[in-house]
Image (cartoon, rainbow, N blue to C red; front, side, top):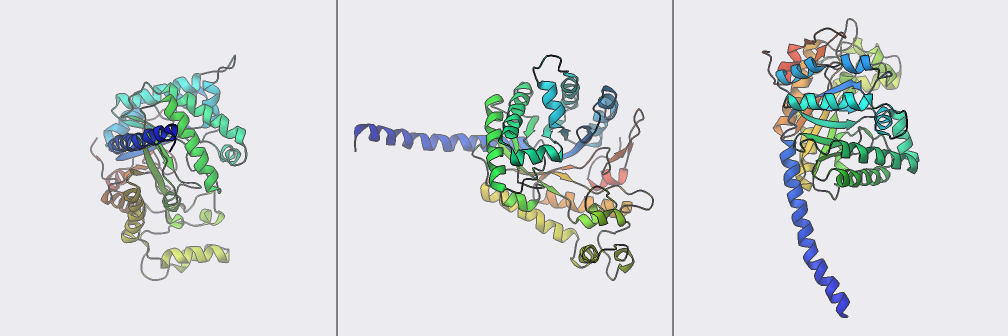
Length: 383
């Protein structure tokens, strides 16, 4: 063997164990950081999922008193949803660009940290933004640049308490493309913030089956995430923004009672949709089935020796004539929460004050806490 090849072989022989040691050290960090993400809440509709990010909205939709209440209820972290486009504009260096969005975001993050709440920085863009990522390499590069700037901006915050979630529910049917995008963005984040933990997830809706089909990143300092809303016939009853027949259903109980619920099923006009609703009552939904599904997610984590969290789960809040009854809602939240905890999986409920909220609130008024949900989450009812 020529000398130069022998030298290269020696270098590789020494490098492989060193890389393995580095990854093992990074994994240890990721597992430790996951301990700060045991029972959280999503802050939605504030810096994302909104049409008008005015100063008034950002100052009042969720405020310092809400953050203090979140800590007082017993949550240990907040998953903070952030719309990619106003964020990118606020971080741009173009003349005349306003940084008000970023300034208020900084205040929110720092107030959470002051209340001893860890923060998941969750980039949560519109569906159209995600569609562009699926078709345009230029869009991917803009997204990567945004993350490079965002990670650099928060690189001075405590890496034990601030983690970076690359993209909420990618909605990319091409799993290979999403794997490439996620790895590319993770590299950019790591360059800008070497010590912070990244949150990664599977393609499409980040469901459990998206998680178990995911190949872990080469980076060891990563926590893996999934979302859980099964069965949608229960959790999304009355919802008007997705499957049309969901908006026609209400009073669907959990767990399903023995016997026929034909009256509820008959409210669904389409035969295929009626079949889906019938299946809900026949499929044995309850604590055991939910536990089996969580076991699958935990098993994937053990297979790859990586930490796993569930940073979205929840049930729409009912209102007169629509949605679930409060007892059924609390039953489902309790069963999901206890199943996650049985597998050592940290969680964040969706959400704080939106349609799935743990509180109700009118702008400028104190939040009203749903004590039944707080109890179902196993948190502090005494405030």
